[in-house]
Image 1 (cartoon, rainbow, N blue to C red):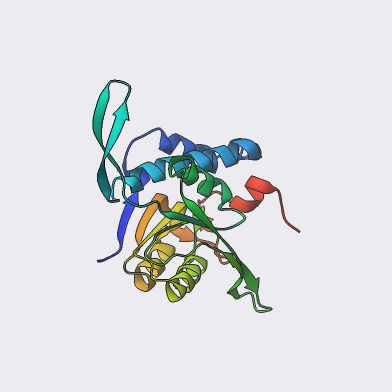
Image 2: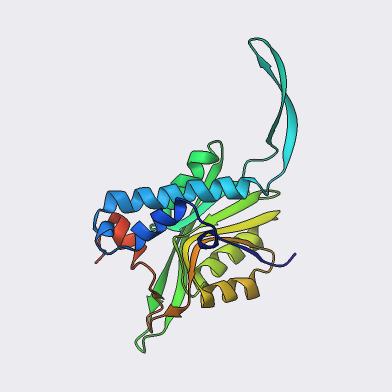
Length: 217
């Protein structure tokens, strides 16, 4: 299975308004609204992802009879890279409200020459064997953090499906994921063409973690 990509910006919907507000340098000063818009996007992506999952028929007893309903066969596990991904993960959890969650700590460690490496510090996860994993991070810039974290999970567990969710991605990041995680399905709010020398997406939206939770020292 080749990597498939869902680009939300290619479809006209209210979700694009939330992306516009995430990008807007004035609106994003309201950190509560910034977090809420990420959460809303998570809900949209959860709905879209749900269309691709498997369902089973289940008899449900109502006060007046019995109805045959299609219900989700298996709940996914919702993973995120701390800290910026928390609101996006919460949006996914609002819809997949019986899902278990996985938390990963990873960060860029900058060298003296300006280059950086991705360092992964901490993982808290349920058993992922035979499970569907949805990995959420607001920004897919170089794609290195996402690929490293996903590969670590794949090395530890027999994951049946991998879905990657991001509010904004770069073309370079998408290409890196496609090259290294060919079975992953990408769910993206928008794809931007450029990045700065420090690997920030342009026009992007800035530092999602700082905008959501305050500037770090």
